[in-house]
Length: 144
Image 1: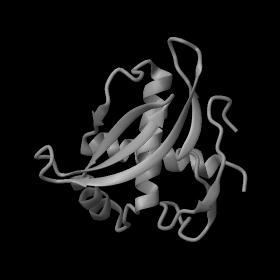
Image 2: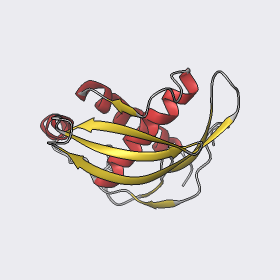
Image 3: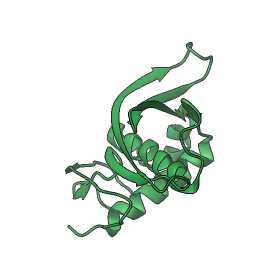
Image 4: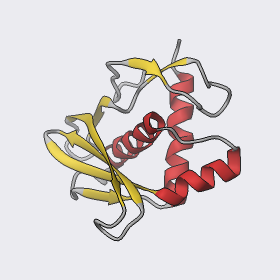
């Protein structure tokens, strides 16, 4: 397992790309520890909730709240990403997979030095799909 990521749970993640529709895979990005690039300190991140945000910010997005080192951090994934992914692959982004996407973004932000400078991060459709691909690839690499 990656030295900067520690998972504490495993569960079913339906409809994953690559034929993992019913396989048990590691849920890596719901409850993990990432090493902050600048401080070199571990930051424990825990997923807390999902909120559909339409009129709130005049943005069509789904917001995912994490506690990262005790601080609230929101990752907003745009609704059009679900449509684009379905169009490209014929598959659906499930709620559990979306949590993994948001968590993967947060882990990447911490490890790349983007850090915890903001409370809200909004991803583009392309960023969302790139983090989906990366999260799934990392989960597929994990031993069963």
